[in-house]
Each structure stands twice: as structure tokens, then as C-alpha cells.
Length: 313
Image (spheres, helix red, strand yellow):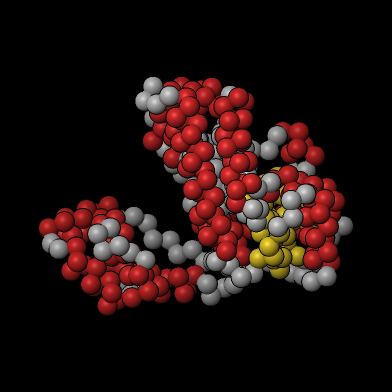
């Protein structure tokens, strides 16, 4: 069976961590004959299962999931690469005659798809970076910041005048591309989305969410997070310095393994960091005006609301 890809609605389920997105998407997929494309920047890594709250093999055997376990724990991965790979996965699902559900909480991934962003590749120029670092350090940072104010007032509002890295990166991009960050942002949005998205934002009550985060953190340790991290550190030399191990849960567990903090402090630290991350996710998704907010607590009620809106839009 084939469907009209151009007119087919691609469903997006986003929201903060521990809000129940994965289970909701799984249950919806069973109802509407869909497959799921993950939008989680940590579940892309192989062998990192407990700390990323990855779906089980059994769930994946029932409903196929894409964009999970696609790279090694020591590999780097970008939003641009995600946008490309996820778009191909969506096409693959739709061509198979099934519905496609995007599910995840990584705001940059969600925005890349919903806004149809074009990514302009500006590779790091190490010699230019070193030259700029030396010049900015030798001179007054305020002088360089004032140049940004003249060139790109919008971007200047987002950069602290004492933030050397961001000031330097602004000029790396400007000197390499002959465009300001605002000009690049405008150009990146010219294409628009590739699909007809209908998006849902799982927005639970905050205090209930924070309780779930605390409980899930405790459960991760009961499920063997310490052993998972130990095994990864043994298998991949220097993995604690990799992109993947900067994730909440892994860097803190490394500190525990190295006896730099107690188990209780580690669990508290992860819970607090995860709650702070959830706050940032709320801010990220609240800023969009194209998401249907879902505030129901029970999955059957949420599924009914989603199905109603899918069929009446």
C-alpha cells in the first residue's frame, strides 16, 4: 500500500524528559499503524541504554524505531546530520505505507524538522580560531563585542560581552562565510518544512514531573547504570571526554566511579541536573506557537485527544 507523502500528516510528540513521550508514541503507533523516528540526541548512541531511558528490544520488535543506536559512543553527531538522516527515515516510513511519528525531547532536533532548516556547513578553521583567540585576548573584549553590535544587533543580544568563545565563534563564522549569524539564520529558514506536520507537546504539571524524574534517576541505578558506565569506560579509552559522555547521568556517574563523590550525592546531582534540563525544555517548547499542548495525565485520554485532532485537521 502507498500513501500520498505530500499530504500525509507526520505526527510529532515532544516534551520534557520523563513526561512519558516514548510510551505514548508506542501506544499511538500500535493504534494507527505507524513507525517511530526518535528525536533524542542521546539515544542515537549504541550501548548507552539505561542512562538514556532507551526503549526495550521487545518494544522495537513490535514497533520499528529509527534514529536509535545509529552511531558508536565515541562518535560525534550534529543537528545537521540528524535533520538529514531523520528526513530520509520519514520518507522511508511513508513510502512503506505507514504513518510516521517523531518522538523526542531534543529541541534542536524538533526545530530542525518543523522549521525545515537548511544547515550551512562552516567547518572549524583551527588557524583562524587561534588567530582570533590571540587577538581578542590581547585586546579589549568590549571592542570586539561592539563590532558585533554594529554588524548584527540581534545576535549581540544573545552574546555576553565577556563570553570569549561565542565572540570568537561569531567572527569565525563571519570571516569564513561573509555572513552574520542573523543572515545565516534567515537563509536557513528559506526552504520551510519538508512534511505536513501535526505536533503535540506533552506538558505535564511540573511538580509531578520532577517527582517522576527523581524516581527514574533512582531506578536507573537499580537497573545497573554504574555497570553500564564502567563497561563503556573499559571498552572505549578516554570515552569520558567524548560528546556522548557529556550527557546528564554519564558524567556524574564517571565522577562516582572515580570516587570523587558518594552514590547519594551522585543521584542527587543527576536528579537536579535533569530537573534543570526539563525546565529548559519547557522554555524551548513554550516558545513555539505551532504545538498542540497535551495536559491530560492518563495515556488513554491523551490518545483520544491526539486521534481527534489528527482526524479533524
